[in-house]
Image 1 (tube, rainbow, N blue to C red):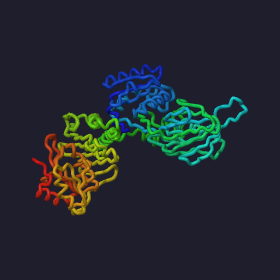
Image 2: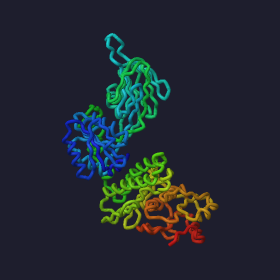
Image 3: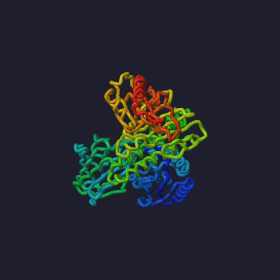
Length: 568
């Protein structure tokens, strides 16, 4: 989950430990002051009655790491991001101190926080099925008779392959988040947990010096077979059972990951393990390269021009808006939604628009905003944002992956920034006019083909099929993707040599025009005049884009045959 998405938070559900009434009331007052809904629930209480899936919800825990783990158990299955406020003593997961509560939350709703994707484990065995963010431990059950055997034997398999027999006091299967707990005390390695999706198998007090921890992929099917009675505990006993000899325990990475919110008020990871675990690679008060890096401002606070900063913000906003689009797109063909496609498409449009416009208003409150899905915002600035939160609505409604998020910035009416994000392929095209065009970090340019018989053409709306009929036989093909923004990006990247759009709205093509032109394309209207983005929602006009060398021939055919020309 992208942190910019948190800017649209409109509901907070808090899980608070006992004796935290003061911080809880501060949190409630903060939410009320900002018009954000607020509900507090007790630890272990089901939030099903108060959580509305349609609302942008933030989970907050107030307490120590135990409360935070309960919050993960509550919020992770619903995909709710979680911020931990430390009202305990030695918290490692909840890393925002109470005195920074309001400041950290202000950062969250400005979209300035980050969201870590944390791997969880899923455990299934006799009498137990549970998910945890830290670890599973399988340990020897102490015998009643002190002379009986005090070790346990566990056989381990990974994806069906026999790993071996572990003899000792037990075994831990931990996530990177759990690597600083039991597995660390058993000489397992510390894993940097941020967006680290691995599992490790750590022997506990092994009786063989050569047995070392193993790191495996989260998709690995780990099977543990007990060779004696053993106790199985998930996340320190939040779920537990006692197993008979010969019991099989199935362990793998959970499908659902936890979303942990981090702010600049959190202790950084290596500072936290230095302070709390006596990490030996640096002293608590050490000043040097690490301290210098921590003192640097975040990237979006460094000295950037308006246009460069706008490009970075637009990329973040587009990727954030793409997340709910992708989630809803995955539901579009489900049984529950087949009869309500129009509703889900409307929800997708509105969610994406809300994320983008909120981010833009937070970062550039003086700029104007012209979006397909919301009311025009007239700012006191030469800059205007042109937004299509979902270009390719028809494709989206039918489960087709060819849809995109399109964001452009105009300066005094001239397009200067273009960003187009494709959620299903994770492509992000972006450009600043006069500089270079990119897909991600890879520079893109148009082709240099000069003849139609070598060229691939893209067509938008073609009401009578004349463009297709005229050019199909002359070119290597004419394709229709159903997204004008995508058409222009594929022209820019060399995946096509020319694009024809019978009629366009400004939000359809503003970003794509910047990207295509910056990559070397020629973009005109149907008469050959340079294409101009106009703020007139009632007037649509044609667009012809090409790699340049093909443009005269394409334009001549359009003039001669009137193929698909838009009416004045």
